[in-house]
Amino acid sequence: MAAVRRWSEGMSSDNIKGLVLAISSSLFIGASFIVKKKGLKKAGASGVRAGVGGYSYLLEPLWWFGMITMVVGEIANFAAYAFAPAILVTPLGALSIIISAVLAHIILREKLHTFGILGCALCVVGSTTIVLHAPQERQIESVTEVWDLATEPGFLFYTALVLTAVFTLIFHFVPQYGQTHIMVYIGVCSLVGSISVMSVKALGIALKLTFSGMNQLLYPQTWAFTLVVASCVITQMNY
Image 1 (spheres, helix red, strand yellow):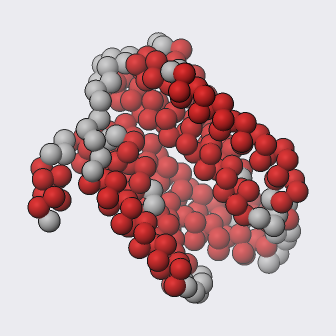
Image 2: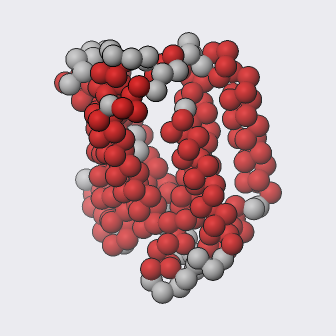
């Protein structure tokens, strides 16, 4: 308790805003998975299932309601990155897993087995540990500072590895194993997500500085990050 008290006292108002937004995001996103699942099941009962390439779910209002709920959650998540450090916001995304698991048990009647409960517990312990020991965020005065960090050799090498792995999964493994091995899709989304976190953080900082009177929309780096965010979001939504 003493550690929690010291941690909360040391948090800035921006970090608290980011924390609240991140938790709200998890609530919306966690609920959206269940609503979309019900929409997919309803659409699959009267048309071609999405799992085999059908798009009948696009005509299902329940699926769209779930998608809108997810968009609201993602907007809250995006805003959270503008206020709080990524190492504080990102682990809280694991809360959406717990919310989905609980709602799936209650609404979809899906049984949560022992390993599922253990996984949820590990998510809570891991997220709490990371958040409590998150370092202070470095002050950023311009989006160009983030660009300089993103173009350092180490991060460029990591990005190249991620893109190579993503393209390998998309063009080689997805056609062969996508319908039977869920880890293929999870791999694509997770790898792309590691890039989108950096881009969302950069774009959030740019918008925050712009609204505070330091226009960052004049820098081409802002629009470059916007393009990366859009590409990552489209890829993740598709897979």
